[in-house]
Length: 375
Image (cartoon, rainbow, N blue to C red; front, side, top):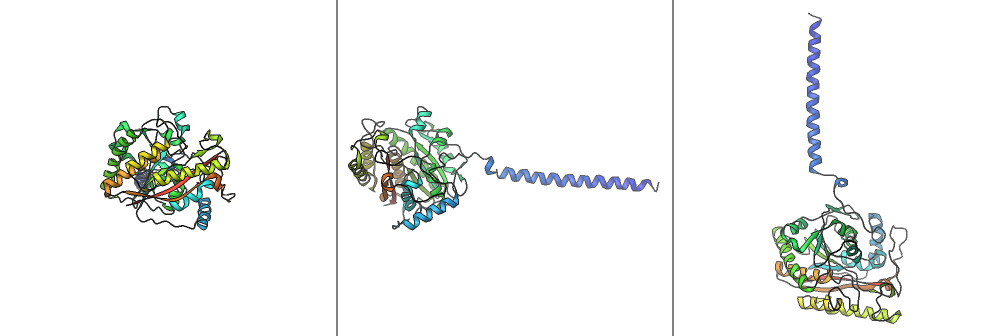
């Protein structure tokens, strides 16, 4: 009996210890599962892949070299006070860097609505993209510092805007480069920024006015519900390169050679002065479309601006949002204008950046950086 008792005690102790260990394990496992549920790792989230890893910068150290160089070259500073919106180029950084820098170094915001282009490459693959906006379902977008989260505004738009006015198409957003082009500069100067990407397809002016009115109502309501201040909490960006000129584009409205380049640049500057700067109103935007478009909204006239839809639609929406929220107007100020033939390539080597197209008198693209201030 004396010998048997220790065995019974040891067996009991073992069972107790094993039960305690099992209890501790279950508690720890539950905590781990709860933590995993609360925060999904970035690599498990739906992230929009990079479209262009040549013309745009996706490494922080390379971006710092680029920004430091551009800062050392920039001679003019622009006021951030009252700045609520802007037109930005989306060409290669080695071509258009001098236009990106003064604009994005002035922007300070928590989130941004970005009106992008729907380029021909997208419309060639996905048919029927006309008179509609394109949204996405990606949880994250690529950034130069870390992935960029989508703003809750995007889902708010989906649930409040008439579904006839938009589609959700991740493939279209994935192969379009005009929105991602702005992200490295935007995030570099606003590390915690969130975005609402909106691609604008070809559409006539009356449809632009109709959709922009409804979209402006949705965005304005969202801003009021979340106590957002335009320019400080939320910013509006329009992605658009200017004229695509030369034989390679089958665009010779002003002829060929140096003289044609000078005339085409002068025409660009006239468009900017007459329609994209100063006080912006519906009449001015309508006038811009008569210069961007030919006989119909699908045709070209004297220039091949790839922002021929994103600019008028974006300006219509922004103008209405500011009017509804603040009862103010917007006034455009030119931050800079240039083109790939004038600029050439920035003298930066071995930083992971390149060019995706040539520059010459038979192939050049113009750019404008324009800021819009409260007035």
